[in-house]
Length: 347
Image: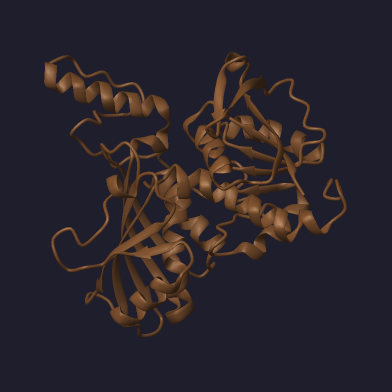
């Protein structure tokens, strides 16, 4: 079977990556629509090496006959259009934060909780988690299965691409400005991002955490286990693509470094690169363009009983967004849509 797919937000960095991943993985499409705001109508985006798609307007786009929508248009836009697409019979796989904590919308990482996809029938929407959450839970799942996680303390080092193309441009122009002694202009970030780190992603909440930090805690509990305690400090760093995380985990049961390494090596979507020598670990630059979640620096944390520390790295545009969404779509068509009569998934 083949499926009619619409990519909403097709001109953004994640939308373009979704189109690239769909083509690379030879997703069974009969037709692909590139959809974005009216200001982008008529623009062209690539789908694979040989196809160029003309952008269509989201405001007037007719979702009737579309099977799957892969969406990354921003939260407010998703809140308005996703129910419209679902009502027309499409299943929406949404990258924005709007639907993630809705009790009737599954929040899915295919290597961690693929069975949750079955819940898509309630609203016709499946949520893609936050990029920093995705890579962390992929690394945590095999360890949770072995020794049961009680608490996670994580500090993130998140690239500017997580804030979109304009943020990437700001890093580039500020870096160039430093070298030519120009004035640095701040537009996307609250402080200079060039040659700096900013402990502030998304808005501040009443308890002093940022919303990005809140997302990591609540999403991890929804995906992996509601009893896991999570405290995050999320930091933007002057890297274009690739998020890194220093993850400290406390387990209910004893787990050795050797057992953790063995579990991670067997886990889907994980590559362990953990050599205690120079260059024996993975950095964001090396993970850019790759599909895997890389785990390095596996070691005992002696400050708590049954503690481990890990270094977790992934491409935030691929596994942290586009690839995860396409993987959800792959499970959806294999285990659900292909087993039901055509259009039987109308809500």
